[in-house]
Image (cartoon, rainbow, N blue to C red; front, side):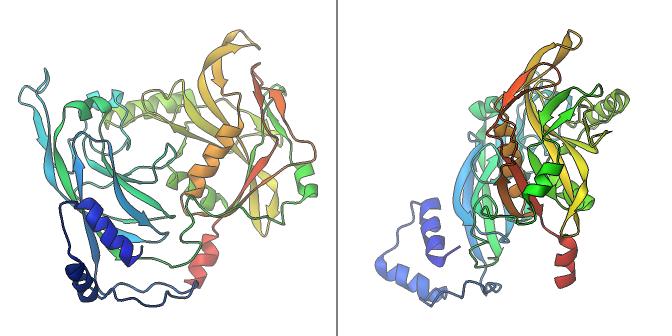
Length: 406
């Protein structure tokens, strides 16, 4: 974050503040913002002698507010929030409800509402890095510290529904302090994750060894293998957890038990099981989902992972089949009801790309096209899909190497 940007943001956040040219010059000099040569591209930014802070008003009628603060990867912030918001009286709450940045304790009624952060309190202060449907919101509350995993624009919001926002009054006053500006490098300024670069160890010979499609228990071919991950089991689990993908239940019995427990704890149930498919003659090792709480039964991003027999640079290679459930259709195998996937399957591949790459745990990524790409095919249940045939490759951060060097 540049020092000029700090002054620009102060003016944008506080438009009523007027500064004469003389006062502006004095402010720059008193804050120690005199012009100086930029640091070398590979130099690490030192801790600032003076903590830079911003004051942001988050109005109750908004779900998201653009702070106009652009963060670098590794930039560390501290949030401190005050103020109150009031929801008007209704049948359940004849006196209305007034609360602070920590929000309202969730009740059973909150299980049927779709809030941005499913495990945060209703009406609490939240944040996110980026302004699109891939950006992963996070809880803030009255106070919190946060480190940006990648570069991006900071947004603050309220964990509420559009219906809440339509009648809510008040605001939260949020102080955002920059505790550490992070690294002043090109990589730290890359928005959305690392740029695409070739992965030499993904060779044509290796791609020929990997099956193009998975199959059902009867051997009928289905979804395509559209993603490859390089990393240990722990690193794979870590990146999906960081990106807010959840491991799905492995059985109906697990689903019933976890749904009851989540409901009693007033949490959204998101781990609905998925069917078993096969690759390398065995069922998936893991299933992950990224779902909306209210529509999890019919609409969710989901994928299956298999650990392959191959390694790259001493770490396992994982094969992924990712699809997006968008509704229901007839299962041609038994005339039952099954999930319908979005036939434009590359969209799900890129959704996984975006969500994982924004965790800061992906260090290299690329797309490769095998010699025999899948461009059109059918699912095991009788549906169809189409693709450009490319496979996404994500190389995960080797945390073992990092910890040794730190």
